[in-house]
Image (cartoon, rainbow, N blue to C red; front, side, top):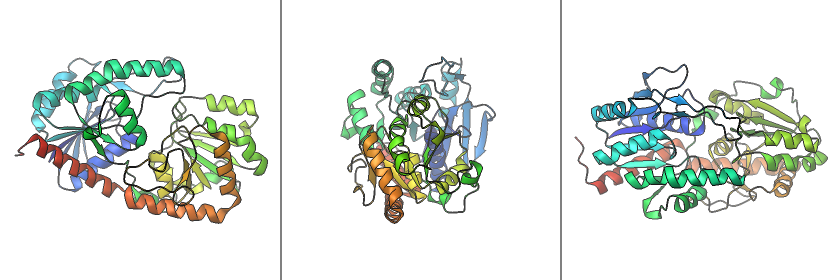
Length: 399
């Protein structure tokens, strides 16, 4: 197949969807397919390059200005630059794609390639990565407006199939975009076990002078949807039982309410903010952890699954039916607490810190579960099977 991978976020830009798009592109090539990546320009990255057997084209883009809001993100917009519509059409016409695999529903590059797909009758799979949700009422209204009047009309126009990774994504697409299960491909987010197979590159405990203290690692960008507040609210109780405990937050901080709350509760000395972490250093942070908790406001994303593959007990906030076709059993092969529940989180953390044997047993089972269902090899196969079915339904004949 000739596969176009589309994502405004792509290496060297960091982020879960960026790494996933790059890893899948590499895997598609390894299985004999021809791949073109379309992404937005990024500082220091060339406009075009060949990597891992596929071509990357970075289109001129305008960076979103910082407005001083808690929802400020590092985002770029391709349509803001004149000529990109013609550029995309010319590039894709030359490549002659069989399928287009889009990542992220609210990017203008997604819409631009979707318009192309509709005109040229190319099947599209759209993987839903980020849900436009917020704990703040006024932001929620803004996001609902954007979904209703900008995202949904584009989805209705070119009618992609949706790559659904979990229950939250399923519910979100049904509610916001009026999608149905007939439009869905249930494919989980992948992880790469090989990244966590070797020794860590860094001694994180030494770097941050943590020593032998209990360490909770919380890795990933801090945004309103993953605000870390339940962990901060749980800290006074945790510190009362394990007073030397440290919380290491690794990721860019877009939303700092957790730091303000920590100061109010008098637990700021237990917090370490590492900032942005390079992909190659992620295994080192997990290697240093006693346990990991990242998705505390609902969900279980890439960072949590990577922590499990690294062999660390990992707490998430989903139900036992979160991943279609995958059986989760709390306190057996998974660690689950309700979303935004500081009391339940505190109890779980204390239980895990109290009993290292139970912690290690559950961590081993979590790793086995992820190895069985979430590896890059399995997820790549699921995507390619979906593409073949899409082409068959479209009656496409490949040259």
